[in-house]
Image 1 (cartoon, one colour):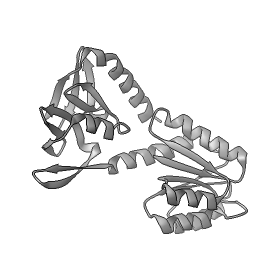
Image 2: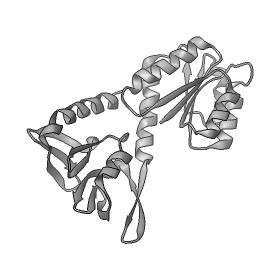
Image 3: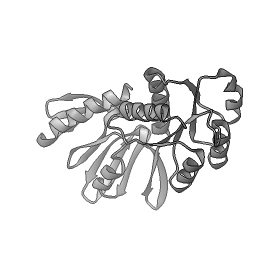
Image 4: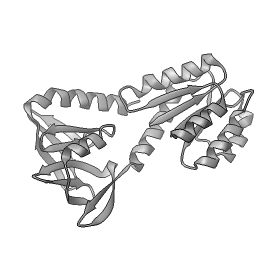
Length: 236
């Protein structure tokens, strides 16, 4: 996820950026800070952002004008205004602002915004696979685990299973920032679907009941660490 902060006052710009970095923890989040809206737009055109935290009162280009220019480029990004003036709220509706945060930003309020955005982003994330010549879009949030079967991979989801000719290692790389962990050379699991660990096994929350999968000895400790980190991140 790419996040941009734009505020002409360095104090608030740095505060917001550092707080987002802290709350994001080990999640795959990039935060860039700008003092000028035009520079932000130039950067966004080259490599788009997903979330914008915009100060409303800026000399060169105010936050409302900047938000309108962002909306011209995308209707799906999230815009959050940083302000101390509630009277700007009506103008914010024109650009479908997600929320207003008063300055200085409070950590608990920022946590709520980030949690909402990350939950929405995870639920929208999809990958494309080919099964028997047909291209299928899978929601990442519905995937339970992958199982390597020689030159094929079986994908188990809450909506059905798919057998495709693929390398499980490629999925591991593709989903590295989506909460998936390689518990065994033959299994890649969604940490969100893990119910518990029992010795050298992990119990997954499958659509038809619990599923036990083996965890290689060398991955037991890393898996525990990954689960702890995932739970901590989910609590932001």
